[in-house]
Length: 280
RNA sequence: AGUGCAUAUCCAU
Image (cartoon, rainbow, N blue to C red):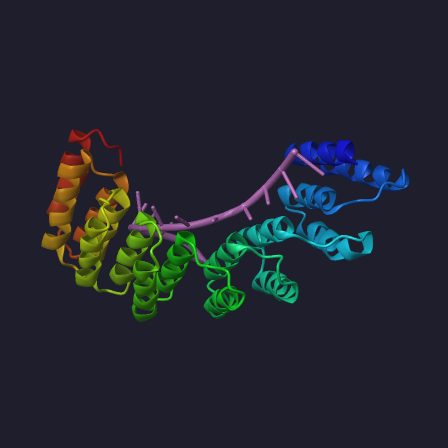
């Protein structure tokens, strides 16, 4: 079985699901009993080539092979549904997941929440977070980052601030992505000043802002047309980071153009960027 | 023996 299973895995990586299918049948004809590993490998063959219906069918047939989906099975399917699937498909996986406790770890839930969020299904994203708590699975830094990012998308800075507060009190290792997402959330909601105050939290935690932080701050001030402040953060990034990121240059140009300040925008594009060796 | 998690700009959605 291990030989077949490994072959199926390798063929799947190669995109050759047809040969994998043939081997999958052959195992059964030999009378070998399939296990969850082998089924996951076969499911992976299908997701690899976007044959989601085949993947879902096999996943639903697992009990008839005497197997149960595990965290790996769910991880595969959640990831696929988030990338290419419909809301309904992801919701159905979530329902299955809830019906089988202990088949989900923090990573499974993180992926679930994030993929609901990508689909803008915020109700289910929050519900997944609630379920995670109810099952006593501790939030990781990634969980906090994902939740705050979700609130940035749904423009709910008040809920983000609550989650952020909980993160600061959690005793988890400081993680810059969590802070950056909080900057993003305030900025997206049109509150650049609280966004700036997060930089203080970053330093207090012993971290330094990175190119994501600076780009987000420039875009936050640019969004409300406050270009002097945007420019200040841009300059600070240039002096601390060495060279500005292309994304931050874009954010600054965009801000100037939204504010109808064409000349400064042109200066960034035609002078500053070439001088720093940055291609538009 | 295997799979799956998170951040920025613009555009598109």
